[in-house]
Length: 298
Image (cartoon, rainbow, N blue to C red; front, side):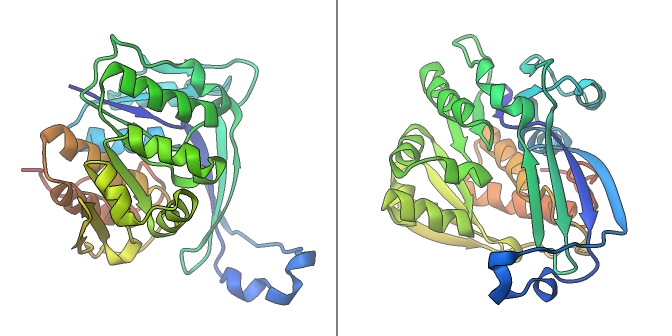
């Protein structure tokens, strides 16, 4: 069976600043912030959470079904998905707007500043999950606000277990809405910062959240991740990458591995181990969809 991946498809414009943001921004002058960064290198990549997760899952041998919306400039992305052997049957296209665009600037310490234009992503709720949607697992990743709310409810109605991965979309939702997502989901994934915000808005601890779902994972970047099941925390150690080149898309690479493991019926800790391994490969390559596997999944 396939994994239905609800999220964004976007074009990423990625720039590298050879200095440190912290050395260019004066804390006592933030009220009149006016900075310019020289970025000698620039490239354009295929990105977006749904596209990146689908790429990771496909590499591992899974069957990704991205559900997303492209704009009038999306023909290249459709061709990209078809070339990778990824189904486009749940990918729509809006003709009066652009595909979502992310402008990402990374400094020498791998800090990032991102500007994001949602474009066609704001119409993603027009894609619907029906009773005839053939998928064994799904994920609600960052997307248009209406799409995230509606797709979560549609997953429940269709009887498809899903991961709630709010990511950078988390600030769009109230504590009540986030609590509803958690109660609908089977699993929740967040990074450390998002986990703190999720707890603050819902009033629940990480242990509380883990008791409301089958499992919760908090990714910790270079420190690995925490797996919470029924209030019990297990630390899954990181995999040290060959080199640290570009963090863009690491979380999505990790989530593709998570979906692969969930489809296989693995424990959440084993899924996290694979996610850490794939994430280490991604961070050693530029762009979110340019890495390859150097191992065989057993």
